Length: 220
Image (tube, rainbow, N blue to C red; front, side):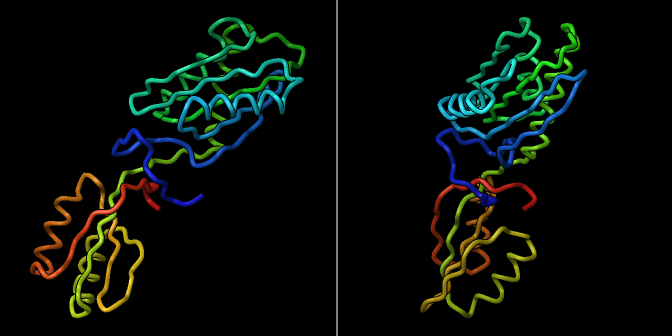
């Protein structure tokens, strides 16, 4: 998966999610708990993921789930799938909230091992299953950036590249034609300041245009 992604409809400056889908199994008193996770952008994505897990583990005792989606976490749903009320779906959702994740769906599959866990034991088991799923998916932070294209004469290239390196500005493609076009990727929140700085740096002798907003993984 690339370290960037195009911006969904609801844009926020940064959010925490998971890098990939994944699964991890833990065993508690002979019951198998398999935590599955998927990054999702819509409720349709989440429901499709849950249905896939249900089909894959059709013979499981329970497939309990929770998901949280949206800029303000406006879509939240959970299911105990036959476990005692509040012992499965809610703990999974609480793990998502406590870890500050957005746009994720988690399913914890249980194969009953013959030993009753009690309400407290079930809550701990489904909590641990959700945590295991997040470990498998690898939590990351996505940060909103903006494409800024800077077109300039070759005589400016060395100075501008040096200043960009000094400021540790994320860079994209460089195109060489009769002039040079640098694809700069500053934080979206800093784009206006960046463009003003670039105008000053090149003494107004560059053509600066805005491109798309893109999410990049923090630290990569």
